Length: 202
Image (cartoon, rainbow, N blue to C red):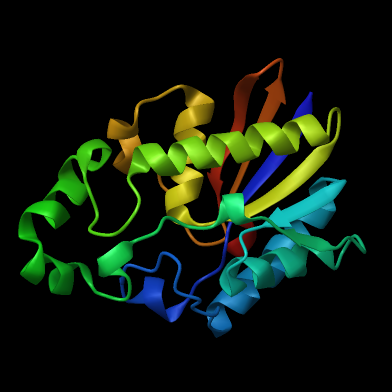
């Protein structure tokens, strides 16, 4: 059985004031850096990971580094954990995107499983990439604990995959900044243990 600690990165200015972030390399703000430190302390007090993997984007890498420093482990950047490609929406607020693509933006917020982002990824494409990454990393670490640091969108689709829920339920899972989720992987199946835990930030 592999234990996976799935973490969302800390706060940035682009999620404090909502913008489509995706592959934009937006840094953690001061609140986000403090959240990352608190998350590192929580992980260190509770688990002993064998490896720490992160999205290649700096907001995730800095969060992962705050965890890894407690264990003298390297942070391994993994492209499979990168956030969704928001294509033409990247950097826009929802209202700015809606002004150009009203039907597509409304689909994203009300029918995400069937939404198509111009020049971007669909949730189905993201989920295929994300779950293949999770399966490969779990196979690499049998009977160990690993940390994966990602983003709100990819973390949600991973959790949907863990629970066996369809992408239609995307908006029914919350991923707050520096939330911790835990699941176990065994025999190609998953058991959710902890969801969107932020008690270490209070």
